[in-house]
Length: 314
Ligand code: NAD
Ligand code: UDP
Image (cartoon, rainbow, N blue to C red):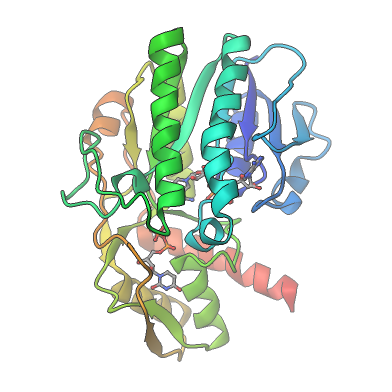
């Protein structure tokens, strides 16, 4: 039975990974300091015989008793409003946290998987984005704290792979959504759904012509697990090709909810990428992966989660 450490395991993606790997028979050690995650995301796992939780900040030295087969490094603020309010923590977890997680992986002779991001491409000037594209990132811009932290994390992961012969994987995750997103995390989908449900104006940043390609969480998790089981050491994009403008996305959510909300435009944040769509031919070819949940179904499932959360809050 493999034993796996998931850093950031009490976050949105990390908690879904805990569920999936427990289902696949792993012994899971979840580590988190609740910087942006929540105990609620893993509450259902308390008492599970193969689940353990350790509260720890991974920018500090990590100690784990016993053997480990895999280390999945997901700890990091991920939403723009989080990393803008937590710039130093974001840089530290991408740099020091990744270094500690790699050092632990090496000591345990385990396999390391880094949660990287489409943000390493920055405001991309190629479209769709292939793994071979080196990116267009402003290192001193507000988003630079996240983008450069992840670019450093990729670089040190490859250094451990080349220099120490460590087994490593790098997944470049594109915008993922689904249950357990925080309703106030500032990302487009939870913001729009919450606004639509309470009849508040939908806040589209800029003209809304900027595009994103949204992937349902179960598909993203499946891509990550396939990558973990593969031997692919170069970065792999995991995301949906179904690209939509943010304005059209806002309208889609208003229609889904049956809301009377209007759309208002506020300023476009600095360095907000204009277009984003993954080239997923590598994931398709090497992992046999492609997303299965279309946006209509994914949004329907997410809406029932959001309704439940809002119901609990009122
Ligand atoms: P999240 O904020 O829900 O989860 C991140 C978790 O990391 C939280 O539980 C937080 O408390 C924890 N954490 C942060 N700093 C820590 C530290 N120093 N020590 C221990 N724990 C720490 O975000 P998410 O959306 O689940 O993202 C998870 C990972 O996936 C991140 O690395 C993110 O960069 C990456 N990613 C996510 C997306 C997406 O669409 N959600 C896209 C690209 C990449
Ligand atoms: N966005 C928006 N209104 C909001 C939140 C986000 O128009 O209330 C825009 C944001 O500027 C970006 C897109 O939606 O262009 C996706 O933003 P999100 O924070 O979800 O993800 P990211 O920018 O990291 O791709």
